[in-house]
Length: 112
Image (cartoon, rainbow, N blue to C red):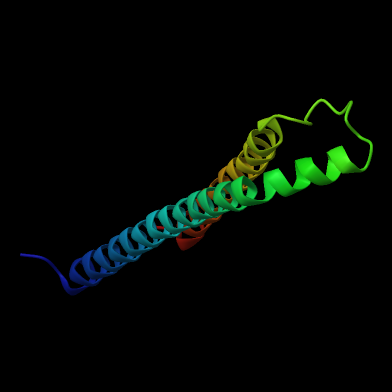
C-alpha cells in the first residue's frame, strides 16, 4: 500500500505527463496548420502568377525589353512560384524548429 506522499507524488507525476502530452499535441497541430497554410499560399500564388504572367510578358515586350530572358516564355511564373515556395518552406522549417525548442524548454522547466 502507498503512503500519502507517494500517492501525491504519483498524482503530480501523472499531471505533468498529461501536460506534456497536451503540449505535444498542441505543437503537432500548430505545425500541421502552419504547413497547410503555407501550402495553400503557394497554390494560390501559383494560380495568381499563372493569370498575371501573360500581362507581365506583354508589358515587357511592349516596353522594348524583348531581349529579356523571360520574354516569350512562361518561365517567369515558374521561377517566381519556386522562389516563393522555397521561402515559405524555409519559414515553416524555422518556425517548427523554434516551436520544438520552445516545447523542449517548457518540458525542461517543469522539473519533472
